Image 1 (cartoon, rainbow, N blue to C red):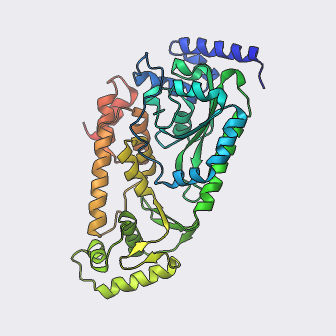
Image 2: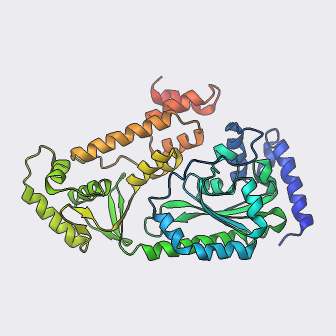
Image 3: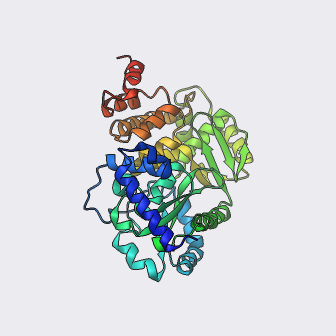
Length: 393
C-alpha cells in the first residue's frame, strides 16, 4: 500500500499530465492509454464545467432483462456487508453506466450522496466524463480511476475500482460493479476486491439460472440451455426466436402465420416441429398457448432493450451481423427490418466517433455509419478521404 506522501506525489503528476497532455503527447504513456482516451472523449462531450454531481435519470431504464436485478436481490446482503466492512461505497451499474443499486458505509454515505453516486444517477462519460464505471464498460476490463484522473472535479477526492459483470452462460456484459473510497485509502488490492464482488453476483446468477435459455441470432444462430449448446434446425430456431419476442405466447394458428405466412405448409407440420422442440427443451415448451417456460435471454433482445434505453454503444456491441439473414418468416423479417431502421436512426444521431469506427470495423457495409463519420470528422482528418472513397464520393 502506498503512503500518503506517495499518493500526493502521484496526484501532482496527474495534474501536470492533464495540463500538458495535449501539447506534449509524449507524456501519454505515463498515464495509461485508456485514461488518456477517456479524457479526450470527455473533452469532446462538452460537459458543463459547473457540473458537480451526476445527472439523475427518471428511472433506471435497462437492467439486463431483469437478470441482473434478480441476482442482486439474492446477494444484496453479502454486498452490503462488503461495503460496510471496507468503509467504501459499492455501486452496481447497468450497461449504460446508470447506477441501479448502491450500498454505502457510514464514512462514504454523505460523500456519495453529494455527487449523486446513488441509484438512478447517470455516470456515463458523456454525462460526467472519466470515471471507473464507464471506463470499465468501455474497455470491458477491470480498472482503477484514481483521484484527479476523474474528469469531474467533485470526485477528485475519490479512488474507484470497477469491473464488468459477465453473465456466466451467455458471456454477455450485464453491467458493472464499482467500489469507491477516498483517495487516501487507495490500495493496490482494490481491483481484486471489486472482482470478488463481481464473482458474488456471478454466483447468484448461476443459482438463479436453473432453467436458462440463451439465443444468439446475429451472424450465426446458436441456442444454449443451461450453458449447453443445443443442435437445432433453422426452422426450430425461428420458432424459438418468435416465442422469445412474444413471451405472452401464441396459439397454433398465429404461430403458423408468423412462421410461414402464405406458404403452403400444413398445421400438422408445425405441430410435429413443436413436438420435437419440446423433447429437445426437456419440457420447457408450454402449449395452449405455445410459450417458453425457461428464463429467456437473447442477443437480439439485448439490442432492442439497449435501444429502448438509448444505449447505442451497448446495442452495437451486441449487434454482430444481420439477424437471421436467410429467414422467410414474415414476422421475423418485419421485426428485423424494424430493428435495423432503429439502429440506423440511432447511428445517424450519434456523436461518438469511437463507437461508429468500432461498429464499422465489425460491419464494413454500414453505410449509415460511414455517412455519419463523414459529417462528424473534420475534412483534414486522415480517415475522411478513405471514408469518402468508401462511400463513392
